[in-house]
Structures are given as structure tokens and as C-alpha cells.
Image (cartoon, rainbow, N blue to C red):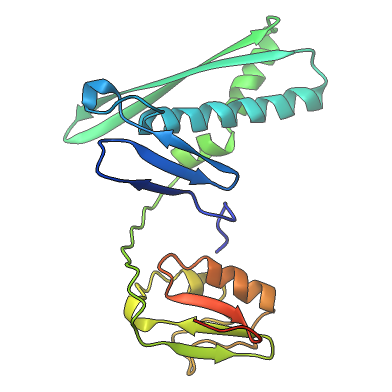
Length: 216
């Protein structure tokens, strides 16, 4: 299992409704709720962020295709919105994506670009099978620690805060195997692979250190 993002998106909220700080790999921004729902509208709300993801992914995918075809289309514009309704106790969501090309395009180009838009990665994600997993962890470090070493790296496991999400087991099964004893085989992969997988641990139950530094 390899995560799409090398660094996960992080977000935090304090006591002020509903101002949130979102941190991504190259900076941070504020998200908020509109005034109508109790926020101060200081940044995009979750629905706006979702639609922005689809809009920007669509534009990037279309630009790559248009450039590859050598078509003279200097500008692409998009509007995205959604509506929802209930049907048989189920919420049905429809997302509308309106495209404009400058200059105008032929019917043949239009047909192909609509197809390409529907195949952008975020479109595929929204139309595919999505599973959510939520884990809760705390910062309590007064816990039992177990150490696993090879010549250059020490992996530290804190079992009391491990939520057994299975990310390490599915991501690097040659190293992390719950049926084996010890369950972490430090010879099962390269140091870079082990360190990258440990860094993906969502709870901090797994950490690593160079053997010439202090493992914690």
C-alpha cells in the first residue's frame, strides 16, 4: 500500500467556530464555514474544497491532453457545483461541471474533451469505491516501547497506542508480519523502505531512528 501523498494533509481546529488551519506539503491555508452556518467565511468550506479538487484536476488533465494533441486552446474555464436530495433514505449527490474553451471548439473536440474530463483522477475517485478509515490517537509517550534493529536503523514500537490499522502490514508485509515472531523483520527490506513505511504510521506507534542517535 502506497499513499498518494508523501506527506498527509493535516488540519486542526481550536475553540473558534469554525476556523481551521490546513497544512499541506508546501504551506498552509485557512478553511472555514460560511456565515450562514455559523462560521466567519475566512476560507473555503469543505464543499468548496471538494469541488475545487475536482475542478483543478479536470483542468490539469484537459491541459495535458490538449497540449499533447497540439490543439490551439489557450484557455479553459470551469464552474463546479453540486446538489443533493433524499431518495429512499439515501442521499443522492449530483455534481455539475461546466466547461468553457476559448476559442470555441469543434463538436468532435467537445465530445472527446468531455470524455477526458470524466477520466481525470478525481473523477475516477468520486465514481469509484471509496473506503474511509478513522483512527484516534493521543500524545501519551509514557508507554512500553519495543525495539527492533538492523545495522543502521532502529524501529520503535509502542503497542499501547497502536490502533492496528494494518497500514504497515499491508504496505510492507516482508517486514511487518503479525504471524511472525518477532513481528518486525528488519532484514525484510531496505532501510529507505522501512523508514518510509514507519513514517506512514498514523498514530505514532511506530517511529525510527539512526542507530547513532537516540531512539525514542
